Image (cartoon, rainbow, N blue to C red; front, top):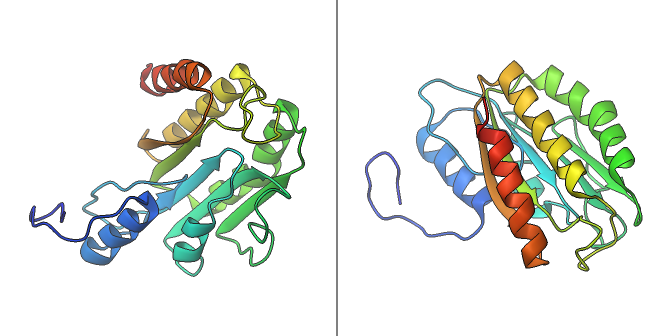
Length: 196
């Protein structure tokens, strides 16, 4: 659906494709933190942050050469062959983590790699693909994050959004397969994002 005129257009399941459709139809620059879109009147940068085990290779393919988008991610590697390592650019800050990596590794990657890239890019909006499958109790992969790691990254995202993007954050559930654990972490994630 076109969000400007309401006319039915193409339908997508992939939120990165939705973002691309919006940018092509309505202009603007976006910062994606792993991604959805938000209507803007003036050009804005978007940053995409991917938090989870799987690399956002579809997002990278779509936005690799787009100066309006910064994508930062952490992911387990090797896990999904051919993803995340080759073809990095200043706008694709992909930090592979080996199986067994925990919250200390996440924090180090975020502060050492994501933060400087975001400071150079200066996003006006942040989009998050919130993947909870890096939790140690989710059997999908082999990262060892715990609830407090997800709370920490959510607070970090909120702080960055307040500093650079006027508090503008859109978060979309991306993954997590241990349903009771997922429910708890999603509730905490939302509570942190909306707290004053």
